[in-house]
Every structure is written in structure tokens, then in C-alpha cells.
Length: 212
Image (cartoon, rainbow, N blue to C red; front, side):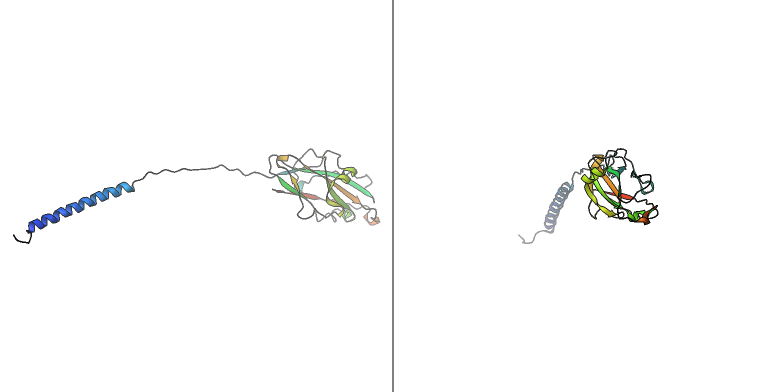
């Protein structure tokens, strides 16, 4: 028998191998298709946020609070004799501050206007003042006695342009929970000479608040 295979036998063998390879490729292709298939899903989150507010109000009688901008400043009730201030006279006035409702908490500092000594016709240059906090904010509560017992904010005897010490503030609670009652005392010292007679002054103070 010849050692060489018949050409038709060799072709048949190659055809069989080719069919086997194609079948394998088909199986592999199906397998890859199954592997790549997947399910998809997701979760979503959202939120609703609202900014708070910071708002302070003031009162000259410790009870009726409102807003007082620089253009509509509250008129402090400094009782002065009809004849005007004289050497040795001290007059007292209350100003209370608290947060509105609603409002976040914050801090307050007292600042005197730089024009306090030159306002009016210059009486401010002859005057001194001090600020203390007192426990009660009721009308008439700011007196010589309550001032003496109060906690110092601006030292008595300060120039009318002196402000609360830098970096020093007082806390105010949120939503008007409590109030700061300031007692201001303005004095004409005994040493003031005749040059002050007939002069006037219109000092002003701001109570600057910052949220915390």
C-alpha cells in the first residue's frame, strides 16, 4: 500500500478540522455574549436646604423692640434738667438689644461714633461716659444705683469717642431668648470750665452684631 494518502482523504480531513474549529468559534462567541450581558440599576438622593437668618432689634425702654438703622436711630432717653447739664451732672439711659425671632445666635459690641466730640456745637469734647450691662431692662432700670452695680463694657470717664475694647463682645441667644441691657452714663466732669456753657452735643453709638 502506498504511504501517501489520497488527495481526497486529505481534503476530507482538513474539512473536518475546519468544521470543528468553526464550531468551537461559534461556541466561544455564544459564551462571550452571555458573559457581557448585565442588569442596571441606581439610587438617587436629594435634599432641601434653607438658610437661616441673623437679625437683632433694639429698645430704649427694654420692652418695645424694633429695627433702628443709622438713618432712623433710636433716641436715647437721657433725662437732662431744663436748664441743661452743669459740672458734676451725670445722666443715664437704657438701650437693650436682642435677636429677633427667628434668628440664629450672635455677639454684640458697642462702638461710639468718631464725631461724638464734635457733633452739635462741640459739647461732646467736654463730656465723658461709660457703659455697663445691668440685669433688668425695665423702663427706669438704668439709674446711678444699677449702673454702679453693673458689669463694665466701656469704662466710666471715657471720651465720648471710646468704643468697647477690640475683640470683646457679648453673646446674644437665638430667637430672642434673652436680651442685653446696656446702661449708658454721660457725665459733665466738675472740672469743665465756662467755655462749655450753651454748647450742644448729639452723640451716637452703634451696637454692632455678628452671627455665630
